[in-house]
Length: 202
Image (cartoon, rainbow, N blue to C red):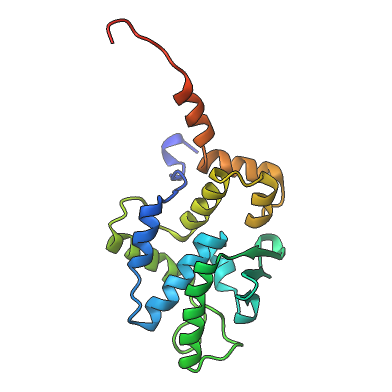
């Protein structure tokens, strides 16, 4: 295949704290769908789940008292448990309360339509694009970008690669290393910034 015919690939998106805040605020808490979408967005960002993993969750998979999510349908059919911080748990709890008020039973997916049907990936893609536009985020806004941001934040916070690997559900350290090299190049950037030089006339 000629170079010009190769499929265009985009660099990974990592959102800033301000961009994430605007995306969250772009979801309306006046409507049940806004409450649901905020919870879905927060789970993608604060737990690092893939879109398919988040959509496969059921209420029983979330333990808000413990602050954990059990992913039963991970990539390669591997399960894992990830943590969820108290602020994120509060947002998910609000959606669980709204679900109950709508009469949605626990056998329905955690993130479902208002009549209990599973959400589709196409809906999430359109939702993220709409939120990005509403929030004024100029980067390409997509659900996997939340996962990129999660991994980048863990790396910046000094979380060991082994822990990041387990949280992301990667099968090997090589995959996690390559992943972080693309989305969290801050060590290379800081190394370059520490190098000094003195040019004549400056």
